[in-house]
Image (cartoon, rainbow, N blue to C red; front, top):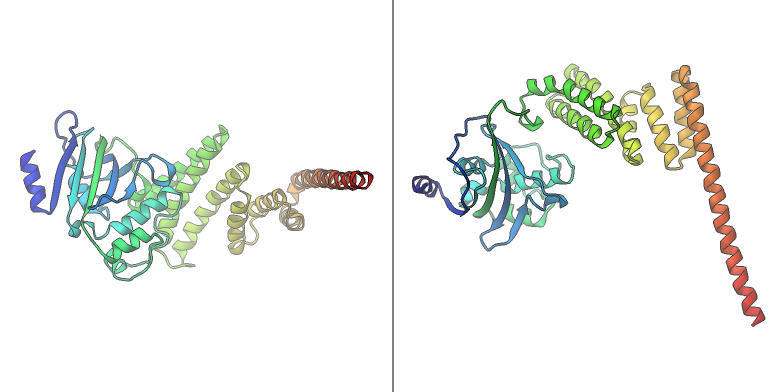
Length: 342
C-alpha cells in the first residue's frame, strides 16, 4: 500500500485510509463497474456534494471503468481501494478542473433532470472558460477559481465486466439502439402488472437513449426522423403512466409536442383530451376528443365514455361549489342577524 501511496503523491494525489476494507486488492479491468458513495469538499472542509443526501436521496455513484468519465481522477483513485474501504483523497487542481461540470450533471440526475441540462454544446475545457453560469453559486465560484478538492469515497461493490447490464450513458450508440426494444418491453410488462411508476422509468430511460442518439443528427434528416418515430410511441406510453399518476400538465406538454410534429396522432389527442378533462379544461378536452372521433370513428364509444365521465365530474364540482357558497352566505346571514338582535 505504501508503494501505491507514493505513486499517487507523485501524481498530485494524497490518500488517507479512514477505514480499511476487506479482502485483497482486486483487479479492475476496463468494463468493471464500481459503486461507491462520495463526499466532495473544499480544503477548508466546506461540503460541495454528498451522494448520501444529494437530491434528498441516498444513491451511490456507479462508474464503468474505461469509458472516459469526465473526471478521470475518480477512476484513478478507486482502483487503489478494497471493497468496504473508506478513504480520503486530496487532489491537486489539475485533477479537479472539470469537477463543476461533473457536479452539475450529478445534481441534475439526482432531481430527475437531463444530466446535460444547462451545459453548452462544447468541450469541457471550453465550458470552463466560457463564464457560463452552471446554475449553482458554489459551482460557479469553483469554476471561476479552480482549486484542489478532497474526495471521501466508500467503495461499496465491484462488479466484473459481463456481470451486469450497462447503464445507458455507458453504452455505445449501437448498444443503445439494440437495448431500446428490450427496455420498451420491460416497461410494457411492468405496466401490465400495475407497476406504473417503474414502467414510466423504463420508458423514460428508453427515450433518453434515443434522444442522446438524436442529438447527433441534423433535425429533419432521415436518421433524425427514424429515431423520432421510435421515440413517439415510447413518449405516449410514458404519458399514459403519467396520466395514472396525476401528472396532467406534463402529459399536456408532451402530447402537444407530439401533435406539433404529427398532427394526425390519435393517441396523442386522446391522452391530451383526458389530461385537459382532468384539469377542468372542458373546451380543450371536447376539441381533442372531437378530433379523435374525426381521425378514428371506431373510437367514438371510448370518447363518449370519457365525455360522460368529464360531465359527471363537472356536475359534481358545480354541486360542491354551490353547497360551499350556500354555506358561506348562510353563515354570513346568521352573523348579521345575531348582531342586530344583540
